[in-house]
Amino acid sequence: MTPHPILDIGEQLGLRKDELIPYGRYEAKVSLDVLARLADRPLGRYVLVTAINPTPLGEGKTTTAVGLVMGLCRLGQRAVVNLRQPSLGPVFGLKGGGAGGGRACIVPMEEMNLHLTGDSHAVQSAHNLLSAFVDNHLFHGNTLELDPGQVAWPRAVSVSDRSLRHVRVIGKNGEEREARFVLTEASEVMAILALATSLADLRARLGRIVVGVARDGRPVTADDLHCAGAMAALLKNALCPNLLQTVEGTPALVHAGPFGNIAHGNSSVLADLLALRCAGYVVTESGFASELGAEKFFNIKCRVSGLTPDAAVIVVTLRALKFYGGGGEVKSGQPVPAGLTGPNRDALARGLANLEQHLANVQAHGIPSVVAVNAFDQDSDDELRWVCEQAEKAGATSAVVTTHFRDGGKGSETLAQAVMAACRQPNRFTPLYDVAWPIKRKIDTIATRMYGASGVSYGAQAEQDIERATRWGYDRLPICMAKTPLSLSHDPALKGRPSGFTVPITELRVLAGAGFLTAVCSGIELLPGLPAHPSGEHIDLDPETGEIVGLS
Image 1 (cartoon, one colour):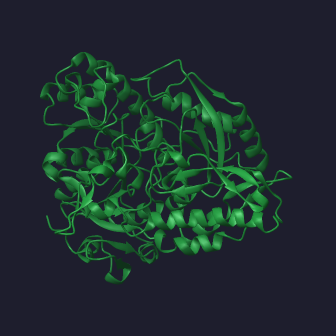
Image 2: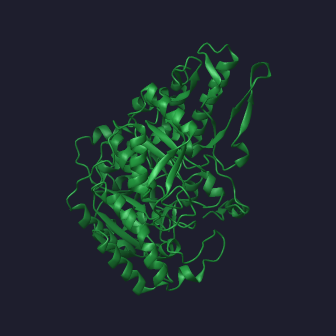
């Protein structure tokens, strides 16, 4: 399909030509002036797409979000899908791109997966500018008395490179200190881009970034280093959401890319605020499963935006249920075993417990949930129907089979009808915890309610971090948990719906600019490594046509 001119896509949302800043023919930035012009327009319906815990192959959350919006548009609704921009780490690493697939994807797919309009590069530049300011301040006399041994601000890189997880920085007179790199999508600057509600808010949040600790124990910030203004200048254009389109020519906003397991895992607040003034239905997606991205959507993003979600869609596949029911192992690049692709009611029944926890997680926040069973060609119709029946018994408002990957919007019309009905249900949305609670009580609540843990343990470093965050006055911030996405627990080996486990917290990081505290579970790395055969091996440029090939 040839994409429509981007000005035509903007017209679908009622955007004026002078409110779009085209980047070529098929992409554009949307001016933030739209928010002022449409301030009096009522908000559309707000729908979150989440999932059960995925297999390493992914279960089609992005394709479901895209397919749902196309299905809504086929039913005569004005709808838009809001997604994160994919990270170059997975694009060239293990997972591949994040633009969807089949008949349910965003186009131009190559641009979305790679540079798009340069937002990620702006984030990386702003992040590393602050890193340079930190070391420059230490070099030129250190008037702030910043303790070199307690510099917390890392450097950022856009591609997975495990060799940069631990580095040494050589300063004045040969003095050395420990340092590290994080993936750009794990940067606090990326989190700020996703959560800022205006240019003024962006600037204020950047200024509050804590880079380290002074020798007298006080926090040292980006404003103390007089760097936040320059960082804001680098991010000015990046703050504007990006307009693209689905393969069926319906609108899509793609903006910001914080990871779901090590950051807050949601696209930007500004994209949602803009879309909700322009469309009757806004469908957004959170990273990984409900205990990660959705929990952070409800308790971090919605606190910032002030928005109330109308419904949630929980994506499930027979393959994933059988995987979590012990039906076989899955490894990227290897054939999926017959125990996951063929009929296997026993594994399916055992794996259903995982879905039940995710239904409970959404129900704990008081909004209706629709289960979308993403069907593959080899799936049994009997098993698909059985899962829908069991999901409704477990508390789903409704459960439907969707075939958007094969059939596009037509394959999601039943899902679209179910979502529209769910949005008309009573809504008792409420956050999981009160931010005024002590830090440990908030962490314990997430671990026990969302993961099913029996408790939480805190290492010596975590105990020190919690005491310091409380002393600095950051104890009233929400919590961003950093843990594996491959289990409800902290341990990827614990499948299904584990119980009786204790979640180990190794450290607590203060992200004062983003406005949350990150509790890091044991084993989490903020800079992934590449697999033995990364996806980048298959990506190339056709010298005859100039087209990118092998990008998926």
